[in-house]
Picture 1 (cartoon, rainbow, N blue to C red):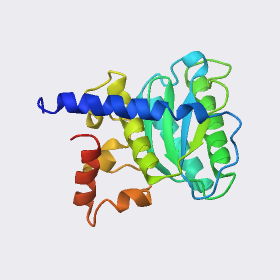
Picture 2: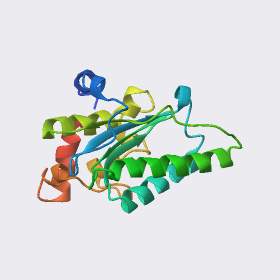
Picture 3: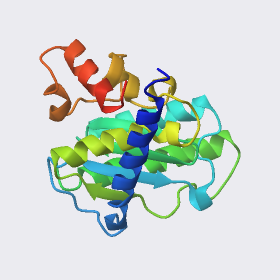
Length: 205
């Protein structure tokens, strides 16, 4: 494991630099999405405040996300819950599927959060940012960028050590009630073991 640490950190830096270069195109005006095209969504807390006080909050958020994505036909392929923001990769079935999903999640979660923690006022910083993911290469970078967030933030040294992301599902086959596998993931191999092994290779594992 030690032998690969330098290579892994170089890969993480390369992924971050490559992906940050694309974020300049993420605008708050994009609210009509191409059906069937994956979208990377980022939602931050107001003034970058914490949006989760405890694990109960995180479970509530995921419950809200599951319910909304099922109702509005916008399956989630990859995600991570950080301290003051979330990343979600999802594919809308209709032009308004994603907008309705995020509206439902945000309204429901803020209501529960404010009630639970006896607070008032907004929780989210403006509107979520979103960008279409139009190529398989870009999709791979999204998976890496999203699931390496906890490592870059110093929460853990391996993405598999972080509980609140989709990584262990993709890399090790752990059950994740949030995730619907994208076609690109299923094409990694003929069996789950093959897919998981190749996926771990994306992260230098």
